[in-house]
Length: 427
Image (tube, rainbow, N blue to C red; front, side):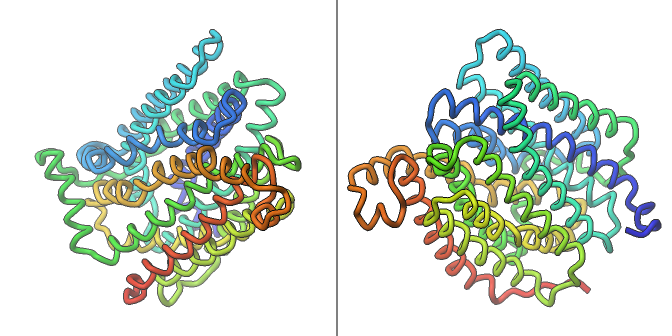
């Protein structure tokens, strides 16, 4: 990146790098807690419930959280939310050190942390818009995808290694260190430009503004609904993956870490692609076609393969175009939504686009534990289903992967018909 670009993006780059480090620490802790819980319960549904508890407040309260974001200073909002999330991590550490950590503790802490993230996330989105000149939206979106990709690679590997060698203690200490670094940097070294606030308006009025904007802008609303269908399949996949890999004779927790990290490797490649790609002729079409490719490949590869190498290939194929989709969607949103409305519109987006994630996580885990595993256990080793999906405990998860592949392609084809009439490319 040229020096003049670095100067123009200095504040964004500092904020992006330190916040990404903090997100890595949080992700490492979340993955380690998943391993701890799966060891205790052996249940795909119980581990999926951790993420469900994080997303429920995100879905239920986002519309009002965005209105709160637009009423207050973005920097102060981010600092308060980060501080409370840090206290949640400390609470988990204290309970764990006193040998009192139970499943419901994790669910409660995740729910509270999720609520804080509900307020913090739209404030962070607006802060990025304020710090980045419009001409760099696509490139900075590529950088954000790159950091998410690195986190996807590193967090399962770091979590698996640290958890196996030293337990949750060192994992949580890393999380707290990353939090302090990001919090200190934001407080003392980042100046976020002021934006007109709506302090005289009620929370309900501001929340309604976000919904009304989406109604007036059907292209954005249909894109959000399309992504909610994608998130339904992707979240169910996340719930099923541990049940596919860990109990498999060729799998285990270490293999799960490697397989999970492959999605991050793919996203790094995809992030580099989006950073150097020219503007496409139609960004809406890019969003639709990339997701059709991803959902139409990865789930089927995972369903019919028994080898870790093929699982890794499936992850790479399924995730390589996700940053391309995300980058184009991000440019559409930032250029279409006025900056003074972005907090509440992004928050409404969060509700409509992400409400399917807890649903997908629940049904993914439920189908593995209560439907497909018992169903597959009733077949002999030479049946057609066993030939397709294998035998043993992981065979039920493989069957669910197949069903997710069929459902994902169907969602893309049906909702994609609605999107095909829309075109978007900024001047």
